[in-house]
Image (cartoon, rainbow, N blue to C red; front, side, top):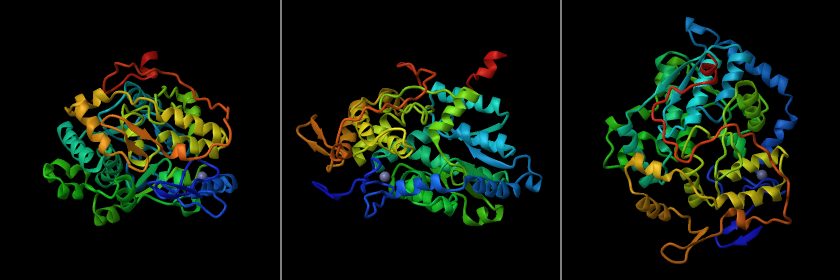
Length: 419
Ligand SMILES: [Zn+2]
């Protein structure tokens, strides 16, 4: 156990996580975290049995109640959108309705991916475009109240599929991986954990549902935020709405899956400034930039720690090399902040002044007005040696420095271009 200025903190011997994690992590007597322990199940589970379990489960939903759609698949143009649709459409032979909540900070590459997804998989896609004026009002409120610029997206993207399920009477929602399981081992693969309102509230939304936002904000009215209300239990029960995660039934490995999607469907990727992973968040200007910077301010670690902890578990990089990369990436500039300020109509300087107030004093020490000393989790984590293992990502597109938000985008897929 390492003694430091914010109490006793334990680091996992295997990955880069510590007991200081917003989702909660437990480190056992051998120094291995709950996330690494649950990850090991990926190597011991007999996956063909799990696959059969899934096939049996979805069979009950195929063309149930004469609906045109067998299930709903939430997509975003990045992350696990392609692989999930690939499994549902091609392997499970289901007809999904794709649903996408518009975050408004769309990259041209994310829009292109969405278009490719719609056309190459021949699927219908339903967009939720909440009035941008309301979205900006909500973003301002959550940024300054909760220190979260992402609340509107997290709330919208997790509630819209559920609303569509009720409205269109399509009970089954199929998600990709469950973050709590994959990152911190909150559940076992054997639990077959399903979507719940409670997990959404406690973890996705940091304990604040739309109703709570109205209570705590003078500027937000019910009419601003009703589109983020979760359907009530009666409606959900009557419809039989349930959300399952493919990660419980398939040996989930995002890096491999993305590489397969690049090969099969020309999924587009690009290089970010603050990470080496070009795959996950290509649909958003902010996730790996401003949002990632805020994460580092508040929690003492950024997304690269999540991504490389996962890669260590898959044995694609050693722990010391990963730490070295983390320390480098954390210092990198967050890009496109000006675009965000223009979109929200706020001043960049005052935004940065506010963001300084979010800095976790356990990791950030203020020297003078503009000078801070950072000693985050990656610096408290020990390294025995300088590793040199390299991890490779395929990069097949570029995001221009002067790129602008695609507020509403149809996009052009490769399929269109060929035609
Ligand atoms: Zn671990």
